[in-house]
Image (cartoon, rainbow, N blue to C red; front, side, top):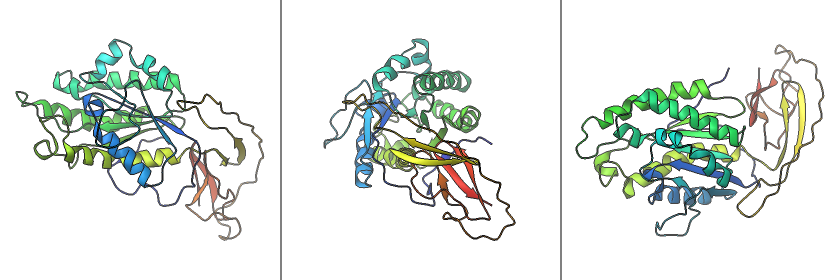
Amino acid sequence: MLYSKVFTGVSLLAFALPALSVTVRINQLGDSITGSPGCWRALLWQKLQAAGITNTDFVGTLAGQGCGFTYDGENDGHGGFLATGIVRDNQLPGWLAISKPDIVTMMLGTNDAWSHLGTSSILQAYTTLVGQIRAQNPKMMILVGQITPLNPTGCTDCNAQVLDLNAAIPGWAAGITTAQSPVSVVDLYTGYDTTTDTSDGVHPNENGNAKIAAKWLAPLSAAIKSFGSSGTTLITGIATSMTSTAKPTSTSTTSKTATTTKTTTAPISSSTACAGGTVSVYAQCGGIGYTGGIVCQQCAKCVYSNDWFSQCLP
């Protein structure tokens, strides 16, 4: 069963993932909240570095702006842009052709809500954007933000538009997510206050930037850690060995190659005593980038969840 995850700041993983060496290209797609100057991106990059997640390349068609320290600032946060407008003008394919990301974080819809375009129109635009993202890379990981509160001068009902959109995003994401290209939802709204966290009821101040960066950190960290330079995946009885070179970065165009071998294994009875094997029940047993054991204890079997994660289940 496919489902989308909603990240609210709680712990995402109950196990450690291995250190990775592949450079992961991350495109942050949005409007002025993302890009002008969007110092939450700078703080997020800084937090990733501090956590030892250094195999990142933030990519996009726009250069980073000054946020008080040096950081990887390329992005696609286009000030004043609407999700519906980006679709109407078919702008995203050209941006993606330049950035070639592995992960897209999308925080769009604020200007659409401000313009009273309605939730159905915004979600239709989201669907088109996801299709264009997958056309660039069928295995793209996509993190969609429920947008921050909106209280600009002269628009007393803007936040009601935001609430309606945010309430609809999880259901929309559940309907469009796939195992190959998962769509996860990140709650950027909860705990955010336009009085204390914005300069004008819309754009984040220092407090707001810190809160947005903190909300993105856990889900983006998990997505980055899903990538690896090599590993072995066991998918319901089929062992697949994979080797790869680094994915393209802004200075490299190396490509990934893979070799595959298939082996069948006998079904494991869940009634067998929990012994043998190297991987305990409920632990990870496969996924792109995973380098640990692949043989579950006899009371469990390795169950494929998506390309990045398989788990020993009874």
